[in-house]
Length: 64
Image (cartoon, rainbow, N blue to C red; front, side, top):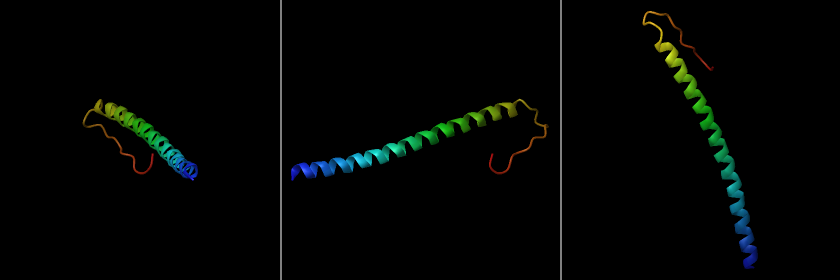
């Protein structure tokens, strides 16, 4: 009886671990994507800073 309870508990914990590991990988991918966006935004800002104040520029609208 105790073995069956331990097995059930183990399977439940194992299932939760698999679910949480999947969520962790998803968050890590999101962080990697955001880091790339941050780097592109920084590089764009650096390029824009080199322009004089009277230079016409355009802001994109919508999804990139």
